[in-house]
Image 1 (cartoon, rainbow over the protein chains, first blue to last red):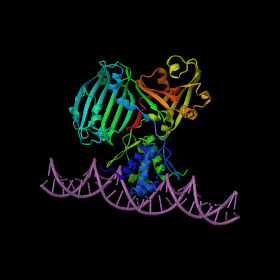
Image 2: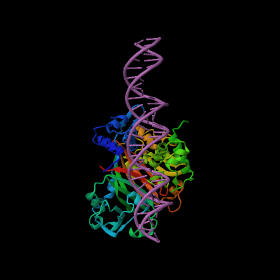
Image 3: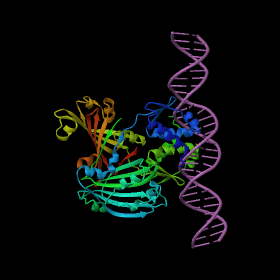
Image 4: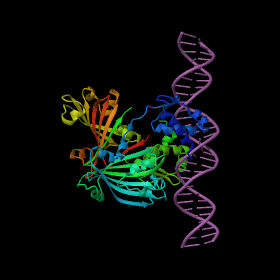
Length: 233
Length: 233
DNA sequence: AAAATACTGTTGTATATACAGCGATATTAT
DNA sequence: ATAATATCGCTGTATATACAACAGTATTTT
């Protein structure tokens, strides 16, 4: 690993925050102090702090100092990935059908988000069924570099996410939720009635700062809701 | 006005973007070009660009250039309540129109979720506009018992959430997200084209274990995405 | 004792500079 | 023609430096 220096400093601060060594309201070392501590220039230390400020973890008060913010509400949106669990918890049967499985070299946005320029990416398309009725179409792209044995798995038995969790620590996720009008193919695969819109959930998953998976999940609007409980601190 | 120079440059870029002079996909001038144009240093021009990148308006591709992103509303899930902040952070104007304001005694599910059997509940319907284009229809039910002075507020100036936050600590939220086909009234109020589905976000907010608000937020699918970054512990 | 003043620490803005990494293009060699 | 090589442009990181603005504290003056 060869992280840039400002990341190193940001990681250091992050650790202090997550360990609560620097609790809510704590005044963290000044830019100058951090700079000398890490033999960096003040501007570099500043950049680290600003990253955390933009994440809402710190707050700056001009002429006074930088302080630890109250910890944010955390969303349990993670449950999205566990469609299998969710179906089983309703006492229904969950099954999967693998529609396709292939290797490609992406270009454009996909290459960019997966940091896979001129590198191989695996793609699978899977339909998740609840009591044999389609509930989700999963279109999944996985970095071949990060997860080389991906295609050898049997995804009618193990879910993609279960497998990914077992081979790499998933550290970050970026989720986008949209409402869309389904394409013809989507309508066919999800056995949709005319006029039923779709929920489209796009999820980019990172493992230690590197993207390993790009998932697009489609749900029929008439059979699916996303729910999440959040405790606000 | 005595704006710092990097703000001046950022405003300049923003103007180019909102006027569509620099359309989606356009490669904007490089850091060096902007710097010389404004007689600033490269680092200052860079700071302007980075501000807009963090707002999702621009995207940088190392060694290649900086490009205009497709304009789409973005919101992190925790900021759902803060649509006003979100719009302002994009340098756009946020305005609200109150469509209706009334008191009712609910029955059925609403009475149940608000724990308001035979009790009064306030209802308001508000349209949120970004640059005078509707971006959200808010249908809000608030427990009269918990927030007795609710209807006396001017919700064309203060958002409902700002007010609720000021009178009660919001501790928990339960969010449901759906895709729906808009009703006629909804189509009219959000000025929707035919065939455009809607994102429907339902949020029940609790204060110390008691529900105080039931909100239904509708967003046009072609103008809005919900995004959320999550750090997985 | 109270008020005015100076000092120190911290963040905010701005510049000039340097080099690394990489994509794209042009040039040269095969 | 093709392949190897060099060059250029652009972003990314890093440093050293300078000054402004302001809060809080210490010191001096009244």
